[in-house]
Image (cartoon, rainbow, N blue to C red):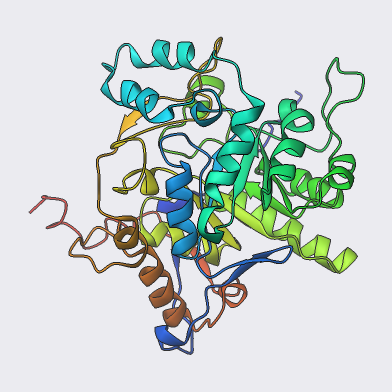
Length: 379
């Protein structure tokens, strides 16, 4: 009697299923250094604001620069389709929930204007601030040169899933090595979740890789398509690709964890698992300075045929300064994220982000419930 061959399924982990092991040596948090660099662009705050219209406006980008981070503007969003984006964003915030996706599809059907691309980049760079912009692979060859010429400091080529090899009807699709020859600014590419794809993207010469498919609070990709990998495993695999690429070529390509982070604990786990920086969406959408007025929605929510996101009500949690640096009276870990990072670095004995990568992570499915009966209202 023959035995049926059963395909094995690899176990993967998300943030809630792992925990960080304290180090044998501890460090004073004030002695830690959180700098992150990508091709000569150095941030003292290793956080990128996600390219979502509810988060990044020119004003918010300048605020992110002021606190040491970097905001990424969506070049295919509301900011580049309308002269007065604030009034459009207000309509989205005021729309009833059952009508908002249809409204988004209608609003995002307006054409992208090249004059607004240059204008928004110039507005972001006021007061000497850095500017970063995001484009989809299909629009990169058309829009990225305009942004670079206007002074953009970083170009992010981003879609739900990005690979170095793409089959299409185009005579010659987007080739990252060609793109790097046409624009003289750092190029970050994403998103991916696997060792092989991350390694191939790095081999094209790009300067950074975004990691994450579907973990964002406003993203419904996993529900709509069934595609995604829990973020801890995705970071671990892509970090291994980064280390292999460094071993083979001598070139370090940082990886940026994108999505799924809600608290300081999640952020710290991302770094320990191998991230060099993180991209935050919803945590920053809760800032008073964010243009979404307490709402957030995914970049693929307005897709005309297959929306893969939703508008979520996230509320306003505090100022950007409070969310990143405190002070705070909230005990849920949603404010003073950099403070949490520095304390964690001290606990694992890491003075720099690369040193955090050496800390141990353990599978811990009960880490959020063990001994927490009173917090959970079970006693």
